[in-house]
Image 1: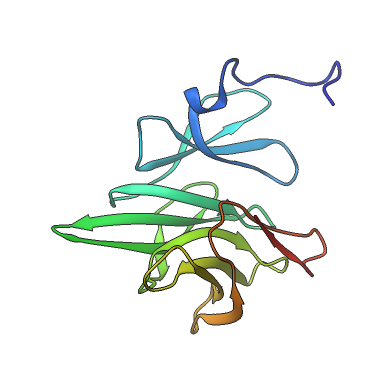
Image 2 (image 1 turned 180 degrees about the vertical axis):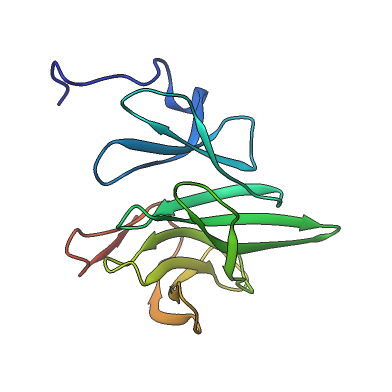
Length: 171
């Protein structure tokens, strides 16, 4: 609940100024993709100061991102359009800024993503062929093959993990 220490960064509707928000675990920094700028992720210190660019993705669109448990990296889903072909890629970028590095290119459309509690894996939903069904997979961030969880999630628009890392929740 708001109290005398609460501060509004911007007034008005959230989607009037940012898309895909992430708050650092210490609550001091917010990361977002500015509306109208589909290729950039910026950060802002909540104690004041200007926006600072974290990265610019050379793809068509930053579709989403998630901040690592230690606040050191952002995992980014980017969409690329090349002629009649579209593909998605998962990338890592230092949270303080830098060049995105591709870590995984799924064969099917990637949707939501979250970090494992230990920060060693990304958990994301990959569309299954021919519909709106999806399955959860685990992608090691330091290399290795993606592994399916064996869980079909159906159509959904939200994915999160419990604080202890034992449960994945989707709706």
